[in-house]
Image (tube, rainbow over all chains, first blue to last red; front, side, top):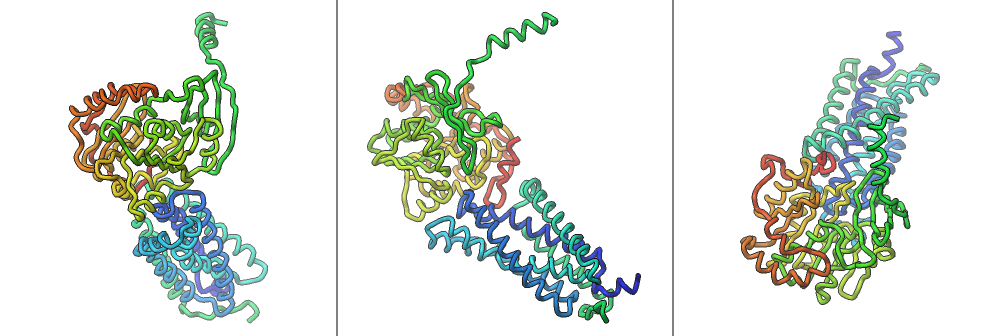
Length: 217
Length: 293
């Protein structure tokens, strides 16, 4: 049993925890998206529509890319880099939201396409990076064909529970307690802490760049 | 049955109002819209299933008379700016406020902003609302319309904010940044009239926010209405003593609409009756829908 556990570069509870964090952060940013955009694009249904569209497309792309990346030597270092880069690419939402939205508001007359373009610029890159986490984390835990479905199920479960918690926490409480940017800084910090946990746990397992022993070897 | 229970029940049954007929129902992107008719009175109701109050009513026998207290109160801004040449109204409802303005000031340019196209067609079809050469409805979000007006350098003498259905509060229309944009499109000497919440924590937050942007405003409340109207203008407020004279000059013109303008100055106050320690609402912090209870 101990031998089998060593196949994976990261312990199962660690992967589950950081999957929860990524699900949480995706929905926190998505819920705040409408508030970030309202001063320029209003509160119409099309603003929500453009945010949800961009998040869905970015996640879809992330799943594809993350799955592809998981095929070659899945390891803790690459996994942690998804979290770090998602955190870094979320910073423009905090630091440059006005600088991004103002020129779009000025040049795009139709508010629907303005909102869509602003969502793409602000949210597509960090969301794609967060989407890459899901398939990659499945690969990190899967040791044999027969329980691949079970691992995928476990990770979808925790990350979706994380998304539910992020949605509820943000819309019920965080916006009542804190300013938008403070909540976003919280999400960025959570992603960086998740990366630190991954690196620490990977280091304890032996190597951050440990090649995974396939079950056929 | 116990007669002590029966008697009040009978009374209740006798006192029950005649049921109104629903003459139109539709579900728009933003809300459920119901039009009810009870005798000559026709009412527009948003989200009837959640027990919302009537949004607008008209009396078909006297369509020019304003049925609701808060609708009448919207004209108190005339005490500060008696002859507006350009008017902006955010929130159409049944259209009785813009129609009254159009009647009173046929030469004035009137822009009405309404986010929900379904409300515009219901106002036209059931509430005698008509656009004219000088009065236009813009289907848009008020924040977006006003930002574009700032860019175009357009200004208005009378701005009326009435975009709150009582059900969902557009939080981006409560913030300091929004009010600063409104201030930029208010002409020198122009007046801002905002229909706001009179109960809940939101009263304090809104008051603090308006105070931050405008320093001073008239707080206008009537015992017959659950609404609180904020009235202010660019520059200093006129002393309340001056309002009575304006009211006497205008009273007759407003009489056909049922606006008791003479009673209003005594109800307008600059006294602070809110908790000044509440947070200002900003684009960063505006949880209006969570502050309403």
